[in-house]
Image (tube, helix red, strand yellow):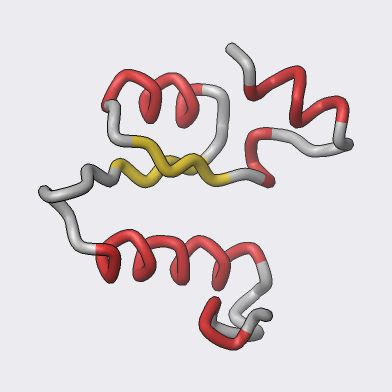
Length: 72
């Protein structure tokens, strides 16, 4: 898998990362390694669904300090 070596090379682990992908198998592989995956398919899901899940993930990562919309 591409992600493990890339994360390690950048001093990160799967728990530090979120994957947005349209394929269930990629999402499953990523979560099986301890990461968070958001399955999103253009035309099947809205961007607000993915943004809401990403907001939730960021909230957990940052300890509830700021919503993603305030991170810029």
